[in-house]
Length: 71
Image (cartoon, rainbow, N blue to C red; front, side, top):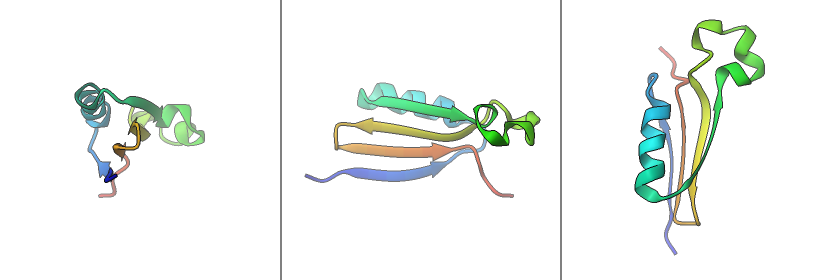
């Protein structure tokens, strides 16, 4: 069976995009914000940005994403 497997970088729109894909693929979504991580104290302005998101749909789709982009 073929599977979609990708890591996507967003600039502050990760949650919005992954919520869309969650509905589109009827998949499970797990999200960790920067504020929930040990980096939260060092990056208070980005605490609501997504450090890592994983969307999984029964071995057919695995999308991972983040708002953590370099300049």
